[in-house]
Image 1 (cartoon, chains in turn red, yellow):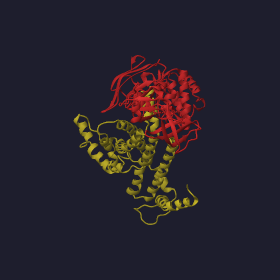
Image 2 (cartoon, each protein chain N blue to C red):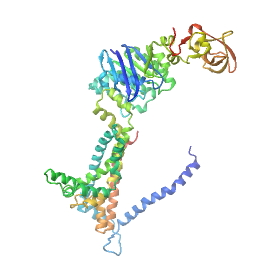
Image 3 (tube, chains in turn cyan, orange):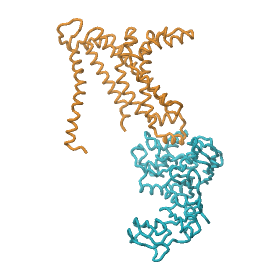
Image 4 (cartoon, each protein chain N blue to C red):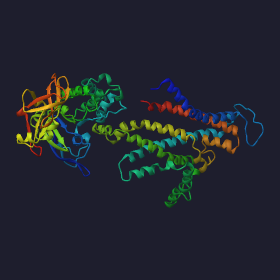
Amino acid sequence: MGQITLSQVRKSFGEVHVIPGVDLTIEDGEFVVFVGPSGCGKSTLLRLIAGLEDTTSGIIAIDGKDATALPPAKRGLAMVFQSYALYPHMSVRKNIAFPLKMAGMSESEQATRVERAAKVLNLTSYLDRRPGQLSGGQRQRVAIGRAIVREPAAFLFDEPLSNLDAALRVGMRQEITELHQSLKTTMVYVTHDQVEAMTMADKIVVLNAGRIEQVGSPLELYRAPVNQFVAGFIGSPKMNFIEGAEAKKHGASTIGIRPEHIEIVEDGPWTGTVGLAEHLGSDTFLRVTVDGIGTLTVRANGEIDRHRNDRITLAPQTDKIHRFDKDGRSMK
Amino acid sequence: MATKASRAAARMMISPAVILLFAWMIVPLGMTLYFSVLRYNLLTPGANPFVGWENYYWFLTDPSFSAAMVNTLVLVGGVLLITVIGGILFALLLDRPMFGQGVIRIMVIAPFFVMPTVSALVWKNMFMNPVNGIFGRIATGLGFQPVDFFGQIPLASIIIIVAWQWLPFATLILLTALQSLDQEQLEAAEMDGANWTSRFWYIMLPHLARAITVVILIQTIFLLSVFAEILVTTNGGPGTASTTVTYLVYVSSLLQYDVGIGSAGGVVAVILANIVAIFLMRMIGKNLDA
């Protein structure tokens, strides 16, 4: 079991209100991702759940029981840190066994559990090495191993992939997702990378300045962002925002259109000059300066042959245009 | 990248300093070795004939020598014990955020700035004097017999004084080491269910191992040559109760005016220091790599 409920949780450091009040329910077995820009309070929120920070006010309940005042060890949660926080002077085996040893488990039980975790994570041949002799991805797996041996009610991940290189990150992303599917344990995952959020989450929580902007499945957030912040944050490359006369035509203060919803056509409402063309192979991203509107990012076919200073005509898919009022809220 | 030419240039540039340092070490050592094989007493001027191992024989069979050896080891061991344990405790305290942290840290480090002679005299006259010292006054005030520190427990008193001087050094090194400990490791241990004692034992202490090694090595080298504190407090007495090997060398050459035996003692001290150093390096030096 691992249901976590936050009600009116606040956190202030002196005069600074990092989290002005958060209500959130994380259901048992869910993979929840907290995503937001740097300094939005997502790590603080995770640390509050872990018990590494005390709440200023509000209640954190785990499986329906009030855990606000419980020390971290008593909450039954395990955490994977950004720096992995492995114990450098202990072998991998001892690192993984440490929480079991602290729980006073017998040597033989410790050994079986460590072996089992090592097998799941492909660490069996590294058990007698020190963390310093492992690569980044292996260290990451040891940190996860140390978390899973305890069989916690929920896993907390604090930006675990940010120290890995791009190729490894994609691999570890899949491994963590698979781990979640096999363990079916609640996971709370903090990241600033919306790609990680979109690919891994059952439920994404978008945070901004300590407030929850929107909670929903990846596609809900993509299709129906509640405001301009979420619309701009979810999706890569970012949504284009257009203000002024073009927005007025749609009866909004600002309109947003994603790069993938703009088509290059023979005859369309917008004409512009290509500035930069990024050819990725599978896609091409064009930066187009559209007359009377401004610069837009457009996603085109990967093998399109358009270059700097070409004139092209664009047409937005009108049903995919998002409209925002002057406060940035979505208009239905 | 070092080319052949740049390496040669580097060697040439650095050689004056190296030669100077080498001469600084080898000339006094050579003269000591030379004097140690001569009959060379300032009270009987004249010829200084070569006598071979005679000076060594007299120094090593001197009844004070075995006492001095034991005293030296007790002094070094006692001071190391107090400063390492005390240093860890102080470092743990000073690592906590508290009011006036900066001032308190400077005050803790202050004893290190006081020269050994002065601090020994302050201890001798203001603290440990049975009549006027603070400890004596407290004891008399409470109705106890005051302790005559330098009469009854001379070596222990010197250990206290020297430990007081070296505690700041140990504290400083250990505090720096403690502050370099990754906080996430401690948090991870906390999540893993380790209480404070376990966190100290399994995380902090192994992290401090290297710093403790450094403290032990550096202090041992300096503690083997403790001298001023003994000279101004007990003069090595009563009897030989607080005579160390260093002090015995002083007694032979400058109180008995026998330069030959004094030099032999100096050579013995150098050899002993090297034995201790090799022993320490082998025992705990492995903490320094990895």
